[in-house]
Image 1 (cartoon, helix red, strand yellow):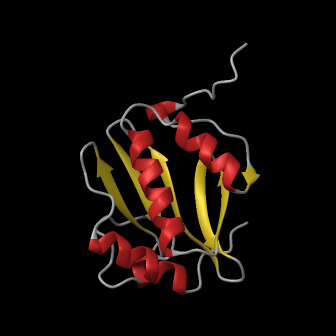
Image 2 (cartoon, rainbow, N blue to C red; image 1 turned 180 degrees about the vertical axis):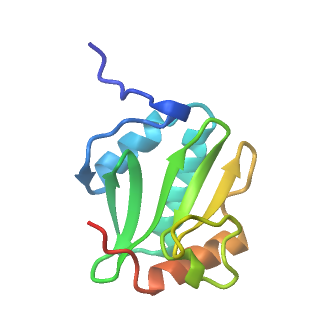
Length: 137
């Protein structure tokens, strides 16, 4: 039996629900192909911009938050892109480009070769970490 995580639909790693950096790093390591590099760069960017960040894995996705303010960002693997979710993205200026059924959430789709560390992404992360986030768990 392998210790490797199962890859679900679209190549998303199946990682057990847990709090902390370790399960997030397991998720990132299990992301297939170029997506693992995107996950690592996102994780490093968030940690650099939000030194007090809390991390968790829920629903086979890493979540990033600030204690007392809630969760502000998550990401998930799909076949052709990594979907970055700003859980209160409708409150960011400018709003991230992709809408959601949830009126508060907004998305950014990162494709192979896309730059993660852009001025816009840094701004969204900093803004999202500074406002009241999602308190769903």
